[in-house]
Image 1 (spheres, rainbow, N blue to C red):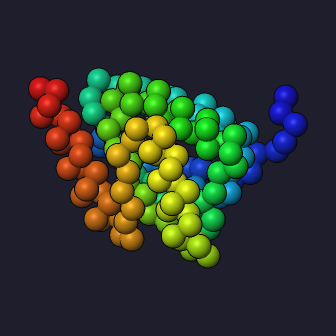
Image 2 (cartoon, rainbow, N blue to C red):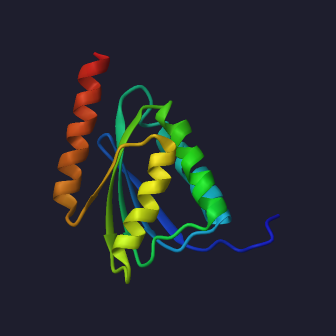
Length: 139
């Protein structure tokens, strides 16, 4: 049993070849571990083809250091399952530029292409392009 309660929330869904993540931070290690367990059944639906992640984060999307390390390792392992890129939208943040820098470092540590957007349509379009490029490479 964990010493700390879960901080932060995450909702998960799949649309086509995109894992849709909506969350409100900040997140601790326990939250990232719980999210990893929650996403596992959804990833089964994406196996065998390239897929991407569309993340919308509300509030202050900050991960404590342990949580950031776990998230980076999770992303690395998901890349072996076909994950190709992540599009991120940061909403309602008091310090969006700091949040983007913080998040970019996590994704960079995982070797994940990431791009930040203000609108869902632009983010989804970019992500579909990334998935399509990988589909062509693997066909």
